[in-house]
Length: 253
Length: 253
DNA sequence: CCCGCCAAATTTGTCTGACAACTTAGAATG
DNA sequence: CATTCTAAGTTGTCAGACAAATTTGGCGGG
Image (tube, rainbow over all chains, first blue to last red; front, side):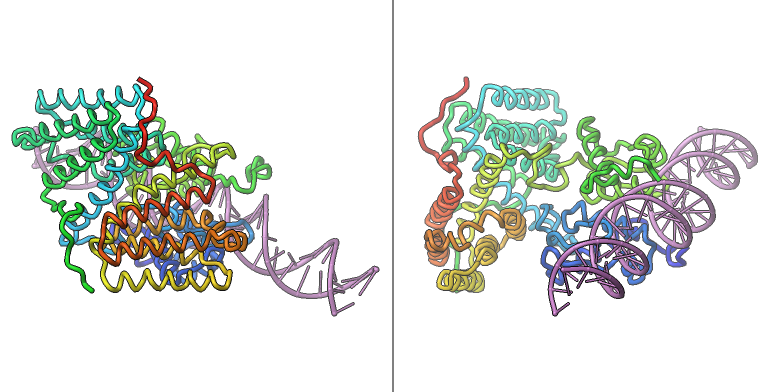
């Protein structure tokens, strides 16, 4: 029993901490793939923890794609953190001051992807794709009637658009982004969103995207998706004018 | 000692298998966040393995963001696989027949993102951003002279472009994608790539992207990035005409 | 001197048992 | 009925043992 364990904060498990420290170390050293990590025995001594804790931390890094292990040989760097999988959480602590900018950055990533995806969907959508979008829209329409929640249906509409590109990587990326941005849809579909007309306006934008995709007009689809994302960002209090090609901004040169 | 362990294939560790099976089960059941998983004891009985194996498998799922644990309470679903982090590997086995299509899908994802990022970079780049791009290009120029490898410098150029958007999410996404696509750059920068002129042509395309960004022309930057990606895909034997808004394709309606 | 073989040492993978730390459920009390 | 307390259950960590795989070093032969 480690005497310090009783003072451990609840969210800070030893295995979590060791995994995080190892990841930071690998990133700081910029180890090339194939570099061998210290043995479990050495890591136990270095961190002052049991072998089980080290093994669980290594398991986490294996899941991240950063580390591979070979029985009898050791653990080896496979990729730097951030290279094997993509997460939205930025490195370092997230503070209250950084949140609006982070959300704006994420919306910008969404803007790039979803305007392009709408274009491709207009070129490639099938009847089944359209039915899937229409079904999500019907559920949103009913939610507007009843003043109920349609966050999941809103997300499903966007995933259906991405699926209509017939590119599973895009569809999966949209599912990932949609899940990460679930909370951003709440102000549209809660009671005050219904009363302020935000839900109704979002649905109109969805209908314009749908119409452009259904008629197979890629340019209109891109423009409809762009307009929707601009409006969605505005509804959240973000400033989307930075994404648009308007007047040229000052250059620091 | 489990009698079946001797017959285990080398790449299939028990903890890997259990983690994979749990992930598939969570996805198949579409568990909502908050749903409690069976206890470790139950999972040990169900899978016929020791508690250490279960714990390591759960550690993997925790790293993936799919599961959270509370000491004394249990393990709970936090997100479906694919919702908490994004990876390029598709679910299910990757066969030889799927590989070219998968690469094409990934290039398309890259196309959507990098054309938009080039546009934003032209609007926002600083002198330091341009110096970083120029440095990567100088290293590629020298590699062309000497007939040596510049895969990493090629990657660095694209990361520098994404960094010039001043959106860290984009820069990190580009770093992720660049790492995943390292192998796709090898045919450009190996001996036969040099001799066939592929490296020289890629560098010309980089120069056009750089020039458009340096002069702050977002439309030209988008077009230069698009042309580069089309040529890069063609160099790999992919068909990039599907990405472009040309004649409308047949609709299944 | 070089190469191949073999045994010993090392390292990861799995199992088991024990105890600590935390949570939950049920019973008892006011 | 609400609150408190206790016991049972569950995860977190430690330690030891053995299995499976890899690496290293020594020895012998060509």
